[in-house]
Length: 471
Image (cartoon, rainbow, N blue to C red; front, side):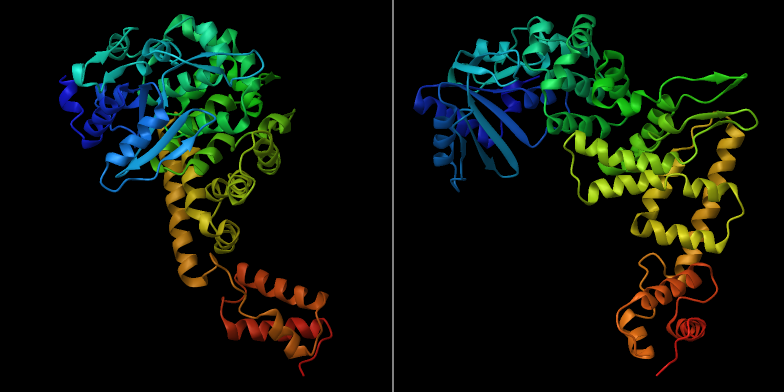
């Protein structure tokens, strides 16, 4: 590969000229170089290392660019960032680091390019391309990162125990890279992750979740989650998942392993959505099965109410990992709580009233719920697989028919509380809620259509039973 040609973007020439004017060396390093060599679409960010002040280099580059983009300076970290066209470019001075046991925040000193490459997490991320006039485009590869790319291997530049103990988030990053790039973590590095797994406890929930999100968004998330499980990290991060592992037997009766089933569901859903929260819903849809598992002599194994229990567990899990407790958490909780509803419908005779209630409760999330439930079909029996999917097609058709006729997805009661009060000369009180609920139930049960006049007549009759008279 002609590396010089690969750096033909104007920004690299400007950085090179700015470096020369400041008499500092500069290099592009990390993910951009890795993805360039892998011929992957690179992320919209570029890391530049200056052997000197990264902040000064960023300011000089901005000064030389046509629109003089604003430079964000982070003095605490000795870094600066600017945006050129649609790319974020981060500048940092070459540095060497030392760590204290209780923190992943290093003590930083100025260093050489070699020092900076030594501190990188994996050899494939320590590759650098020179932006200096004397050797522009030369590849600097002190740890055989190029060979690691060719063999699809992840290994640390230095002793993996030190690398992972210093910054335990690197363990998560390694597993994420393995999942994203379809690479293998070399044996010694993988064993070092297992040896240092307890160190993950010093990492904030937000940083852990950021890596989990990236693993979830890969083509086959199970790759990453199986590595998390193999190394013992998953039990420390998401014990709700590892609690699902194992098959119990009682009186000759067994149940499926809900941990491996869950990973199949996540893999099934991945091609059908790029919504990370729907993927979280798939990951957590069965977490209520561990605490609700029971064996009955007559009926065998059951997980009664696991959807409800799982939905409640979602909030505690989100709180523990410092995940958003807003509509995203409520969405995942709702998906988990409703995860069996369409499945039950697909196994029974599909009635209009049952479909109306499903659409009413799911609202705008009905399509996501159907995607989740279809991903939940993991049977290896081809006849059952075909039958279950055909049943879901029937449910989907019913949803379309019911929604076109009854409009319950964004349900608004045909009769407002204000109109009920005016009709019967009532003040705010219990009777209004009773009548509104009765009208809603009548529509969902199919007793009346979702239209004003039938609802009004129904209201008068129901009010009469309550002893209310129209004024």
